[in-house]
Image 1 (spheres, rainbow, N blue to C red):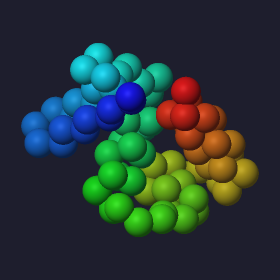
Image 2: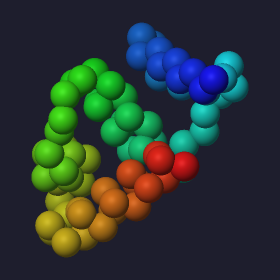
Image 3: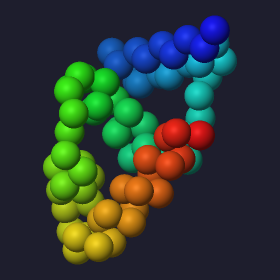
Length: 73
């Protein structure tokens, strides 16, 4: 059984089946933490504006899509 543990007090720590999870980028970890805390659906546009505020819409959507794909792995 897969078990995911997320600790957000202090430095964020994510463990899956008691093994530390490594993230490709800090923003990938930030997205996971943000979605965990929000505990509700969040619009992609909101995530783009939060994490890539200086990007145009097309670039922001591309980077977000790539980051979400990394999180799914």
